[in-house]
Amino acid sequence: MQEAFQMSKMITGAWISQMVYVTAKLKLADLVAVKPRSAEELAGLTETQPDMMFRVLRALASVGVFAENEDSKFETTPLSETLRSDIPNSQWALAIMMGEEHYRCWGELIYSLETGKKSFDKLYDQPIFEYLGENSEAAIVFDAAMTSVHGRESIPMATAYDFSQFSSMVDIGGGNGSLLSTILGVHESVKGAIYDLPSVINRTQTTLSASPVADRIELLSGNFFESAPAGFDCYLMRHIIHDWTDEECGIILQKLSFGNAR
Image: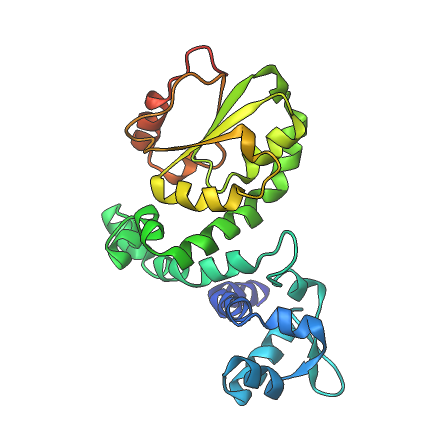
C-alpha cells in the first residue's frame, strides 16, 4: 500500500507543478506577501473565477504553498516566498518556464523516445534557442530562470578558483553575463567577454548596462557550432555541454581556440 500511495503521488505530480506555475504566472505570492487575502480578493485581482481560485489555493496550502487562516484568508509561507517575483534567488521565472514550454515538451516524451528527436522542435517548429530569439517575453523568462537555477553557484565559483592568473577570459554561451560579472567583480585585474548568439547578446547588452564591471566586458556574437573567439587566456562554459548530443558537444569543443588557455 505504501508503494502504491507513493506511486500515485508521482503520477499526479504534474497537478502540483501546474498549480505552482499558476501561482507564478498570476503572481499570487507577490499579492499574498502584501497581506493575507481571500480567494475572492485574489480572483478579483487576477481576473479569475473565485471558486476555482479557492480550490487551487486550498490544494496549494495542503503542500505548504500558502496557509489558510481561520478567516479563510491565505497567508504567505516559506515555500510561497520562493515564488515571489521581487526577491533574490526567486523561483518565479523557473516555475513559469517549466509550466509553459517545458511542460508541453514533457507531454511529448514518447515522441522523443520513439524518434530520437527533440519534442520542442516538433511542438514549436524550431529549436529552442531560435524560438527564444523570436519571442522576447519567453527569452526574458528564460534568462531569469537560468539565473535562479545557477545564480547561487556564481560566488562560490568566483572565489574557489584563482581567475586572477588570467588577463582575459571568455564565457562561451555566457547568456546574461551574471557569472562573468561576478567573476570580474571578485578579480578586478581580469577583463572578459561573453560569446553567444546575436539575439542573446542584444538582451545581454541591456542587462549589463548598469553593471559596475560593464567597462571590462566585451560582447561578442556568434554560433559556437561554427566558430569561437580566439586569443583569450581562459575559456569558460557553465551548464552548456549538457544541452547537446555527444556529437554536437564534440563540434563545440573542436571549435574552441584553446591555444594555451585553461
